Amino acid sequence: MVKRIAVLVLLGSAAAGQAQSVDQAEEVLARAAAAYERVRTLRSEFVQKIEIPALEARKEGRGVVYQKKPNYFLMKFEEPAGDIVVADGEWFWMYYPSAQPDQVVRTAIERSAEGATLGGQFLVDPTERYVATYVTREDVEGRAAHQLSLVPKFEAPYTLVRVWIDASDYLVRQFEIHEENETVRTIVLRNVEAGAELSDQLFRFSPPEGTEVFTR
Image (cartoon, rainbow, N blue to C red):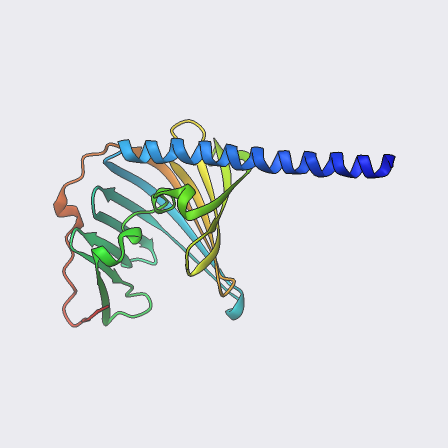
């Protein structure tokens, strides 16, 4: 009887802890969503790492990202040099000369709304779209951050997202996407600047001469 009571107490404690972790996660997500709602523009440096177990490969990249509401986005790679992703308000352009120098891919913005941001895409109706769990509090680039685990409730090309949300301004500082094929994509955002003056012209893109444009 004593053992049974002890087991019940432990189970009750675990359930309470899980409920608390969900409540914490939802509170952090609510603050983060509110923070992104207030921000009109963002500029930051980024470092991207991609681990591809199926190919036993690892890729790295870095550069600068600019974001401006509602549908402007620029991810400009310094490494690999020349790679670029742009949302110009109408089209979402992807050009990776490091891999396919003769090809540009574009998609209508309305079909890739989540793509026209970096990190903030996980804060669109987060509690409706994800099962969220608070994991821990740890530093990212010397700043305290809340680490959350997000499991999508909808059909997605990934099974899990870990996101690190700054404990001060509640902007995303790091996220880690676990794809269905076990590829893991990690992006760290550094020197995040909210409210920067960004001209619409910054987000203009013209396919380089000699490239073929594929529309999806």
